[in-house]
Length: 173
Image (cartoon, rainbow, N blue to C red; front, side, top):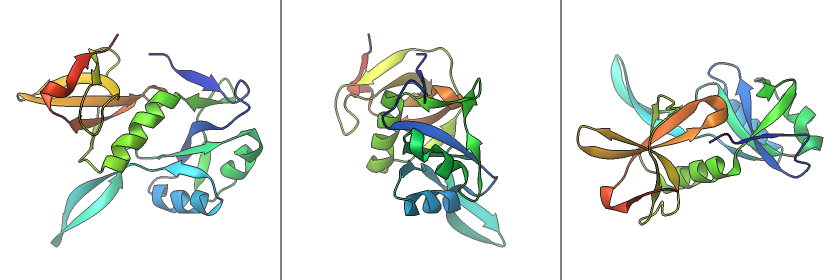
């Protein structure tokens, strides 16, 4: 699904991927939050071993924070400490498809265990018909007899994997 929107074509609010310095995702997230802008930073729980075991939260999309803003806020976002730039195409910031962002937000709010997954340019598109993610669409992947749904952010060519019940899936049109 090609779902790209340029900031020039959308005078209203749109979602954009903000490229940030390595390991600055959480600080940029807090700074953007302090500016009163809507933002999203999906995290995953990871167990790290360094002399002792500890659970930490790391970004699912390392190097990116998602932010919703309009044209007038663009310069303010780029000037935020830790921000490298807005993801662009041909010099113009490229918006993220609203359906992809809505699915990602619902997944984030649900608190389900998520993990990064390689971007799949082709695959069966499915829609979840029941459960807390009813209405969400994504690409289906079978892994060791478990049904898993991959939700993709086309602009970044990144995806997130979530396990769901097989009975909830229907083929999307």
